[in-house]
Length: 361
Image 1: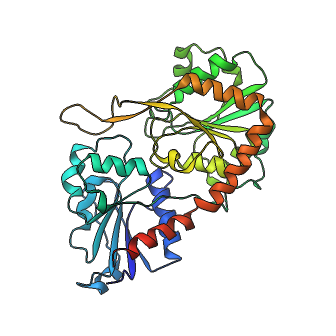
Image 2: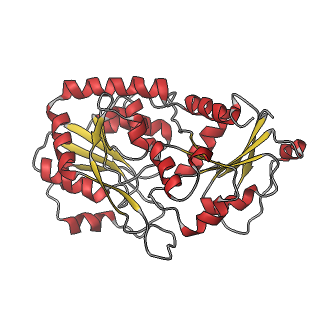
Image 3: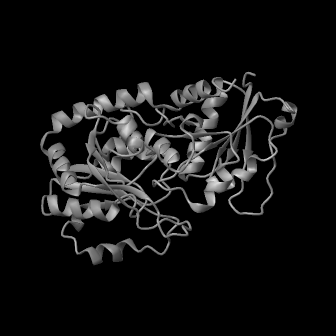
């Protein structure tokens, strides 16, 4: 039986990671085959209105239902005709306790990178039912031809930029300490951060900075929240290099967006970035495997699994290398932009998804 349509269930509206990925993935796949959309609620107990086109498939196996959501939401696939696929995104080597039993209800699992497939196998899922179906990014918005944001372009000095929520997983405070240790007092170096965390309104960045006792405060620029894609592309275009010492990003959308804009990018060579960054197209940051101290889920044994611990001494060396070898860095950034545009777009992701669906028939 050939798959004739895809039914995508997930969070389509909003600016958070799941929302953006679900929306753009569905739009790209819809350019290749019929796609039905069922929007899921954020709160348990809210009504779900299943796309009416699903009923036309009856008992046929020509429909692929793809869930973009937390693994404990697999119950939304119950009763759906056809194949049941869960797109699994998780940051450590150990799935949450509440995900394991629900995930068993699916037929197959899609993951965004090879490390994520290894994680699924380590958690007891057979390798032959786990497909690496990478995500993508929008090169019509993020590309080297973007007009730089004037306010950022006007800032003096060499501008490193970091985009990611203020949190331990993104390595925000570690990056600030590394920048402070390497560049404090050098007026030629600046660090720009887009690190608002709407899920943590209790975080007081000014108080956090005071507690860190940094010497480079006048070399820091913090961007407000709510920056849309068009403006963010201009912000990236106005910067000189991207820096992302993440502990785990199964995809790493801001990293690929910075690369697509032609920036030389430092990123931890673990999880998603390990699949789309090489020494030819970026500055991979070394890491060691380390325990994850906490995640917002329940683990009966208190073990949250492992993720990467970036080498922050090497982070300093790579930032210094880019700062002092700007021609080299610009050439790396140019290769990165071409690499992302050729291999890691949403259309490319949709082609890989279509091929994975074709293998189901």
